[in-house]
Length: 251
Image (cartoon, rainbow, N blue to C red; front, side):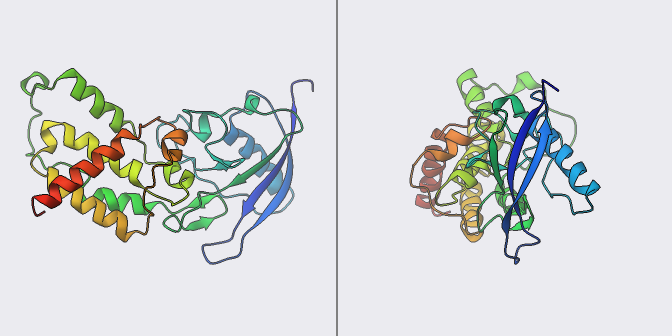
């Protein structure tokens, strides 16, 4: 078939968090129009037909929304294209005969569950610590009753685009979660609904981030460079500013 690519894969296999992992070689034929995850579906069907155990990997929406598709592809989280998740990456981004190395997110805070699947519940605990607003229940307030300047709304919306995939942690040499936490703090600190808990929120989230074992930020910019939603590093500056203000006020 003229429109078929022959791909060589080196895939990380690891039975569980405490097991010793290793790379496993596979060959697969794929269409250039397949997504990277569809190629993995074909590979797993091939593995199952041969009586072996399929490769575990995370996926859900396959539309670039949920952030589940966590693969490091040839050394880059979500692969060689900027501004896309793994599920949005297509095989036409590679060439016939290419060798592709696929690994999980690498971070002590993201322990391996199996193969390419990692446990990212540390992010959930950071959100539980303060990444929310407390509001009265009942009918929704009319949108026009809370006036928000467009510049503020745009900045908050940009930060809110973070899907919590963890690519920033995987890309960072320190496994820092500052871009993720910065995005959540920026989003809520900019909006009127986030003001009552503004200072207690940032302290609680940073404390939980540190407790989870994420590293410090040394401003290399790898996080923003690999973020599929292109969250800017300015959210880290906002996070630092919000944290220092809160500590100065005794929070």
